[in-house]
Amino acid sequence: MDLENDWYFDEPGYDHLTFEYVDDYVDLIDDLDVPVTFFAVGRTIERFPDVIDTLTDRLECEFHLHSYQHDTSKSYEFRTEIRDGKEAFEAHFGHEPDGYRAPQGNIEPEEFRILEEEGFRFDSSVFPSYRPGVYNNVHAPLTPYRAPGTEELLEIPIGATPGTRIPISLSYLKLLGRPFATYLEYASLPPVVVCNTHLHDIYRTDSHDRIPRLKRAIYDRNMSRSEQLLRRLLERLRSDGYEFVTMNEIYARSRTERQTP
Ligand SMILES: [Zn+2]
View (cartoon, rainbow, N blue to C red):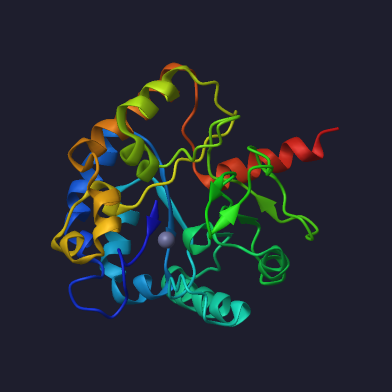
């Protein structure tokens, strides 16, 4: 779960409106009976410490960093952005974040090295897929691997279907709807499946009416079926024998595997 500002920071009516559904979200996750890994935006942590505490207290979950300001235009110096994010994170949690996820999966090769220098153990930004103008990672591995240019930073990519390379995220499940859900029931999936979600994939707020029309059309698709689509995916994984764990657990197991000859 990327825990963020919905659409735009500092614009009344656009940011964090989904936070009014935090209790519903906790109930949903309770019912789905899965642990959650949150990638939280630094400024979100600063502004909503109570929400972070509610999630921490009521769910089996852990937190990592999702940038400081979620600036998708990337008009900042990367290291400064990371340090500001770490500072916000540490001020709340009392320890540094272990993992990082870039907004929109938009990460540059040299940024992996900076993340490692800044003390991160893993990154989970890469969509091994193609999104015009944002990323083209159709040849990236589907399972955890050492990030290029680093000593040991582990990249834990977001799940995608082998061959067709469609991200296993709630936004794609909603966009592509039942045909994709059915396809997922039969497709063979990688041994590690990171399922990406956002609160605004699940909960519709008034802010949805104010975003540009095309974006709104995309987000509104299957909005009423969102929980059902997520549930169906998790049931499929469960019946296939998948175990549900947090990112730290995936990291720990990948490390053990790499050290075993
Ligand atoms: Zn995000």
